[in-house]
Image 1 (cartoon, one colour):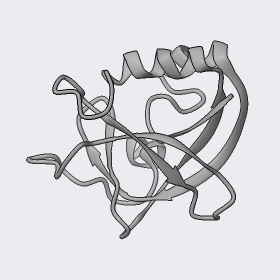
Image 2 (cartoon, rainbow, N blue to C red):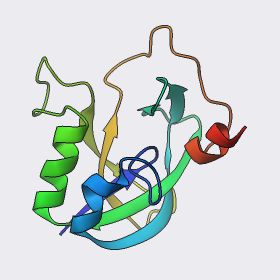
Image 3 (cartoon, rainbow, N blue to C red):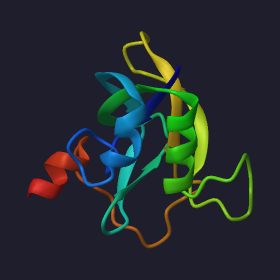
Length: 124
């Protein structure tokens, strides 16, 4: 089993959750340090110490991680075709850690999302 922190369209009830759902063993709310940016139909997370991003920890099988890698266009560490990178993070509580998909560098021309939650931002 693998833990993955999700904060956007892979969240329970969001439009891409179906990709992970068959492989999910457990879901737990959580938060990591970072900032969200609006890419349009989905958010991008920039891993920085300032800020908090709310989401969920999904415990998934290895097959689930592979399915999410495909969705997120993650082909391996530092691959030139990656849309997102995948890094190891710790929940702000210190009680959980696992993988997260994040934007690989400073988000050029992307508007920052006010607040800590993609769901709350979308509802505005």
